[in-house]
Image (cartoon, rainbow, N blue to C red; front, side):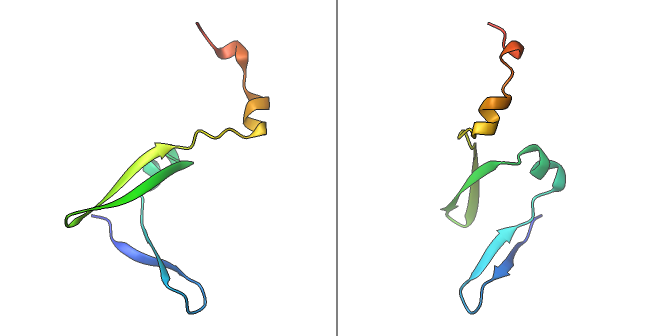
Length: 68
C-alpha cells in the first residue's frame, strides 16, 4: 500500500502532494508523465510516454539499428 504525503511546501503556499513509487517501477518508467483523475473514492494515475524528442535524442539516434 502506498501513502499520499506532502512532498513540498513553498513559503506559506498550498502544499504539494505526492506518492511514493517503488524504485524499480520509477527507474523503468522514468521520463513518463501521469494524468491524475478522481474516480469515485479512488485516484487513478494514467501513464503515458513523453514523445517530445530533444535535439540530443535526434543526434544520438542510430539509424543502423532500425529493421524494416
